[in-house]
Image 1: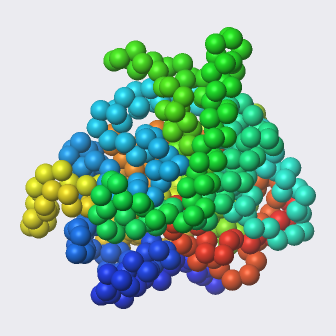
Image 2 (image 1 turned 120 degrees about the horizontal axis):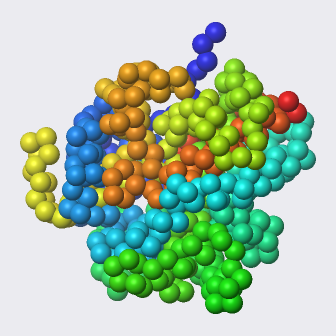
Length: 450
């Protein structure tokens, strides 16, 4: 008996009005798109206010992300909804400001630092196992559990505190409220508003963002004092706060650091939680693969070198990121006139690159909607990894924490499946995308001891 393909959201009709599209977009970014995007190399969308082009042809994606990134800065449309929380973080900035920020941040995530953060990841993985141990024989909402685990990793590696720390736990719980307010789905994504005009956020969005930033400010100020006193732990926060820009000699001030910590939490916690939840769901529906991971994890030790031996887990996690990329779409803006596939593109046009559609593109991948971790050893899989696999973006703006995520994800996945068997409960989850790709009503898994 063949296992059905993993869940995929329905597509909208090919032609809808702007009002219908805005309504669908607010409900879910993925199902607001037409089916033809899984086959098209390029598609144009017109509104009264701007033109938008989705690029699926690998050579065009290469131009925008790798060859000429300065000609295609991040669009301000999507960032409008996130700015109350993220301020001028590296996720939202462009140009020289962004380059300065990356010069300061990147050294903290270099290869050698991954080894240094591994013990903190290990402790977070053990804590996740201990929490799940309390639910043996029960069905749990696994997205809540993976959110808890991912947040624990962030606080342990960034500030050397567990999720149980008073401030860390408060940030975690308030962030859940912030996510539910759907800040990315803001009017400014559709209508060009002048800077002075209110952005019409939901009443709780700005309030929660302000509260979260206040809590992060507490942690940042306390760390600054520890650095001055010479008592700061050697973690990511200390590394970033003491790294000077090699060109100017400047370091981040308090507000700049608050901006960066906010995006580390958003990107590092929310995306990892999404990927890990979908990976566990795929294991629940493919028990042969979860048994392979469990067998591989038998010899897993608190040693960074053991991560390199998690080959099955890494391929499963990589396939999860293909099917359910946490950040489903990236929006850039053309800064000059272009001609792509014989289409004239004016300055200011929105250039949408969608990992969701690129990773499932019918003209690129063998069995695009199927779950197949062995694809990464095939010629098709290797070719697509080079040309059409961008769960962490690509080029100059590739996620600085990509290597971090590819240690964290397989490690926690292996640790959980080493101790537990998981099986799916209830109807299949339907993927939806707001901040990241999550399930519309959660993912229920039954936990049993292995």
